[in-house]
Amino acid sequence: MNKQYDYLIVGAGIYGASFACMAHRHGKRCLVIDKRNHLGGNIYCENIEGINVHKYGAHIFHTSNKKVWEFVNDIVEFNRYTNSPIANYKGRQYNLPFNMNTFYQMWGVLTPSEAQAKIEEQRQEALERMKADGVTEPRNLEEQAQLLIGKDIYEILIKGYTEKQWGRKCSELPAFIIKRLPVRFVHDNNYFNDRFQGIPMGGFNKLIDGMLKGVEIKLNTDFFDDRQHWEQIADKILYTGKLDEYYDYRFGKLEYRTVRFEEEVLDMPNYQGNAVMNFTDAEVPYTRIIEHKHFEMFGDEVYKCPKTVISREYSSEWKEGMEPYYSVNDEKNMSLYQRYRDLADQEPNLILGGHLAEYKYYDMAPIVEKVMGLFAE
Image (cartoon, rainbow, N blue to C red; front, top):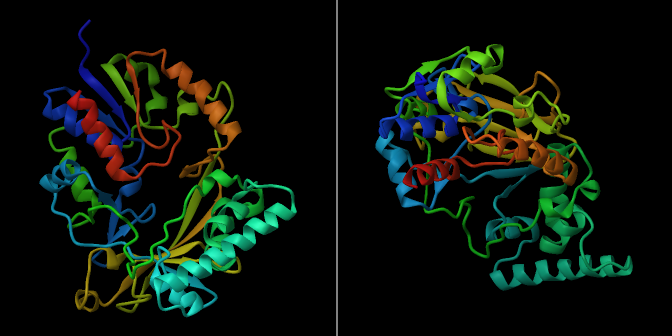
């Protein structure tokens, strides 16, 4: 029996939109459904006071893959935004990622050799503490971080932020969460090493709308409300939702961390002077403040818009009804995910894609690159 569509795409986020775009360009019949009332998934922006507000957290597109960069720029032109976050610890500000500006702010050192010596001194102190306990390999995130960067930077810029983010003490978190830390002995506040980065001119909605041009879409449509119908209308399903939900939680529920956003419109043109400010001390309950206008307004442009919009981000354990943001990639959850993945691998007409279906953290560009690779094959 001929099906109505080649692909049913469940979820209109970056993975679903990229896949639909590629499939449509290859002449495939696609239907995209999403239970939300808008496209774009977590990269959706809402225009408030003339400012594109990232409703589900800050997103910056960055890549070193020229083909990926050309692909998205063919859809919408990107601006020159460079991610240079600031860390705020008890009212003192430090540049991120860790670089010569940070080391000067931390210790007053002026040269790379001075900074290297200070870090190495503290790394050796961490190693000696571990040896005193009879261990040579870090047992938790706290030991791993101090072994990489020393006590001062760990205590001021890592500990409080990480514990708020995960809801657990660093001494209780596995060491593998911090396998490495970006350290630069140059004055460079650019967070990413990638060759290309920016924000779509006009916001991420422009990118998603461009990707889905010509594709049939149904919003406010939950796959699970009429699953039997949706499974019958297409030859293949691309599923981007929670994998445990797809199998009705038969083995149990995967765990997530979630984020709550406290949004505020302020009657001033410039609140913190930067798009992203992390609050790294434990006493401040939120992890960071995003000032959205700085993603797309630069220099004097900032003052042409008399108001600004900020979002405070609070990290917490995920509960039913909340948005799942970050997978908890510990041994228990990865074992559970693999059981669901084994079921999915037995279904030749099912394709999994995205951070929920694959239970892993994804940046946007690797998603686009992965989908481009699927259709290149």
